Image (cartoon, rainbow, N blue to C red; front, side, top):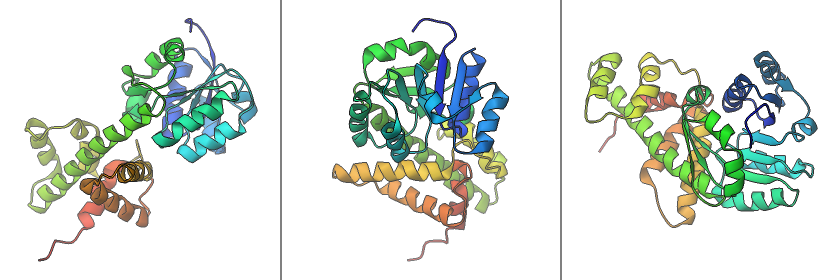
Length: 289
């Protein structure tokens, strides 16, 4: 893909979609997008993009899918007209369904590329994320300038499906880092340490992880304005658990983390930032013999 102004489409204008839109519009691209939420469509117009009907989005050369899950991506492809666009899915989806969705896309002349994101929506808005890209190498090379714009790095990880396999394995590790930090903070506070003091100590210790930088202050202040929602993490960890089970592997820490997220969902906390995993941990009663 040569440098210059491109007409780019986007489906889904939530946290991730709006961050993608901001970067693309800021780079001078003509962005047209669709979201069923009128407020999100209005926000796109405020950024300088064009909110339009689904059919108009499909006329773009490259389209980013930022929908919630695999079912929504499948519905998008099912409703797509025939054409010759590249559809880049940045959502976390079921890796075992991606090849079938790529085949369904190809039957309509659409090339499906996976590019799930490792990083928060805030990091994405700064172009400071990793994209795990999978699919046709020549197509990836053609859209590389756009992938570079959205990320600090993108890695081509092979055939369709591998992008989301890598993303789920990374999400497992990241989510459990987040949960460990939350439980450590709850423990420190119940022992009488101030949360911000504990966070300072933890960052200087052998226990340090990047989760402390991205989520530590949110936990310490209980400021759970979403960068990545608990509802999304629960969806991802359900895919992780089910994928492992299908391969004959149990994941005990994943099971516990899912229990905590289900508790959060039951307490209407699903739209809080995923750092709010601290809340169900803090509600957990002491273990008894």
